Amino acid sequence: MREYKVVFVTGTFIEKYDPTIEDFYRKEIEVDSSPSVLEILDTAGTEQFASMRDLYIRNGQGFILVYSLVNQQSFQDIKPMRDQIIRVKRYQQVPVVLVGNKVDLEAEREVSPGEGQALAEDWGCPFMETSAKSKTMVDELFTEIVRQMDFCPLPDRRRVCCPKCSLQ
Image (cartoon, rainbow, N blue to C red; front, side):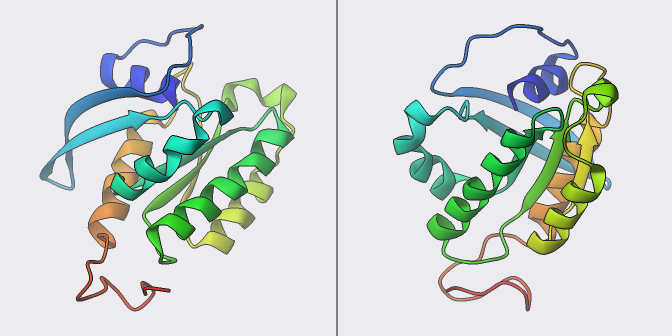
């Protein structure tokens, strides 16, 4: 996710970075003729910070779940992340986009587009393949998560946003 933020916010790709507990960016964009201010929090995804994830999830409104399409294990690791989001949010229909990153490394691919698409269909969320390095589909990714948040805003205690959304 960190690569996306930097490319999306600054327009440049950073080859190497040091993971931190969190990294925060803010950016204004226009989606479907409506202004939006994104507050992007990268939790680094490392296990050493797992205890803080519930707090991040509780406060988050939309989630971009990213795996490396050149690493099958990262694809497997993304599934418990979504389960944790559902558990913490306590309802099934949370704004999520599933993303396979590193489409620029097609020759090294370990996760087929069909596998990603099937998982996204199972979850009921959009699926995209991107490349932070070549800036492929990065802007579209953030546009899509805004659309997902607009389509199905997080329910409060009194109502749900659509028939698919329900408190568990």
